[in-house]
Each structure stands twice: as C-alpha cells, then as structure tokens.
Length: 372
Image (cartoon, rainbow, N blue to C red):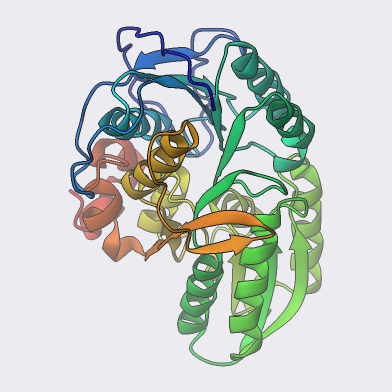
C-alpha cells in the first residue's frame, strides 16, 4: 500500500473535563461540525501495559471514529490513549478524531469525511453498526482499511474487542450468584442488528439456561427506539411483578438504566449491566445495579493502534485470537466489577474519578463503599 506522509499538527487539548455528566444530564456539544475532526500529531509515549515498541511505519493518516457521548465512555481518555499508542509505533502518523455524539447519521457523514480527508485506515466504533455498512464498503472500495473497534461487521479488515462471550458469561454468573436459588428472570438484550450483542446474548443464555434461572420474558432492545423498550418493560412488569422475579439480565448499562427506571424504587432485584458507564457505576454505588463489565481503555487502545499501524504497512499486527466470519479478530479479557471493585478498577485507572461518581446525593453511599 502506497503511504502518504502524515501532516504533523500540534496536539490539541483532548476533551473537556467530564464534569456535569450524570444519569440524566445532557453533555456539552463539542466544537466543530460532523465533518471537522480534531487532529493530533502522534506524540511518542510508552504504554505501561506493553513493552516499548520500535517505530514501524514511516507515516500515514488514521481516523478514529467514536460513538460518544462522554457519558457512555471516557471518550477523551480513549482517544488520547489511542494517539499515544499510535505514536509509539508511528511518530509521523496523524490521527483524526471524530465524535458522533450518539448520532448514527452524523457518524455516517464523518466516515465519508474521514475518507475524503485522506484517511488510509479507519478505526470504527459504531453508534449503530447497521447504519455504517454502506459507508464501510465504500471506504474499502477506495482502498481504505477498516478496523472495527468493538464493532463487528462482515468484511472488516480486522476486529478488536473485549471477548463478548466472556461478557455474557460473567453477567449471567453474577446474576445466578445473586439469585441464590431457582427463580424467574427477565432478559433485556442488546440491539437486534448488532452481531456482537447477539453473541453476548447467546453466551448469557448458555449460562442461565444451564443454571437455576427460568427466563419468563425476553426482549432485544434497539437503542434507536427506547420507547419500545420502555413499553415492553412496563408490560412485562405488569405480567410478572418485580416481587415474582429473582433478577433482570440487562445487556449493558444503558439497558440497565431503562430497567431501573421501570422498576419501583423499593424493588430489590439484581440487575446486570456492561460498559462501566458513569450512570452505571453510580448505580453500583447506590445499590440499584448489581454489576457491570469494565473494558479498560489502555489494552484496547494499544491493540487497536498496533493493528491500525500494521494496516498502514508498519509492522506485524500480531497473531489474531480467532477469526470471526472471516475477519481476523483480536480479543481482550473484560473485567466484571461490583461496588466492591470500583475503587480498584475504574477509579484506579482514571476511567472515572471519585468526584465524578460521588454526586452530593450519593455521598453517603460513596462513604459506605469506601470511596470517600
């Protein structure tokens, strides 16, 4: 692949502080239009979780498309860590950042803009995978390599993700432990058009079906139609009141939030989650969510950067863990956490700070959890 020299641009401030993020608060809109990325010259840094790596590429342009908004993930941490990992292998590479702010239409426009701007590799963490299928195919037709970051689509050049089988298994095991015996369970899964969500669902089912849980209701929640999810939850909790259930399996923290809102305040049901979002971690602390699954940024960013730089022709991406539908796949180990693990995981890693987690109304719970 013919490489173009990357344009070196001074590093910009990466993302304002995430103050104000909350269960229901809105996040400030970043500056720049959907087609205007934040660009950064990759500055040399060594990841503490990996040995120092000799530079392997002479230069190039990589576009990182993230879903946003920051309440879903510490996006500023994501992109700065990724840029550092790229710089370790390719000091002259340029990384362009595009934040979709949760808007799949915006992300489709950003994908086109990234290709038009000369990106040779696109790292894509999709808002909604189905919405970018055509854009990915068009980019590849123009010779652009597309690496899925927690996004699995047919025909990707590579796929990096935390092991979704492990995610589903850990969620289901945690729910079975919390049930402490046979009982009825409701399952609220992820998007029906997301192949990764289907994989998590299958893995969770295998554990629950082999345990003491009886699934009495199941729904695949499409994030683009939250009203449908709320309506279904209202209906299922009418037919199966919370006091007749032993737990609720929720595929991720966003789904868990919908479940918790649908439950009465005094309902004492274990609810799973995944993503370690700020609202999700706050619910761990308040006792309204049983667990979440943490995906540390550093290993994912480092692995994704290695694969992206290799796609530029800069070195060996390493041996894939497996192949998924013909796509070379690099899997990482997720970390299940409960309230007892918050301090040693998301806080210790700087993913969320105690100040961000412990809003005034949660101070008593934070003290109980040892965070204050």
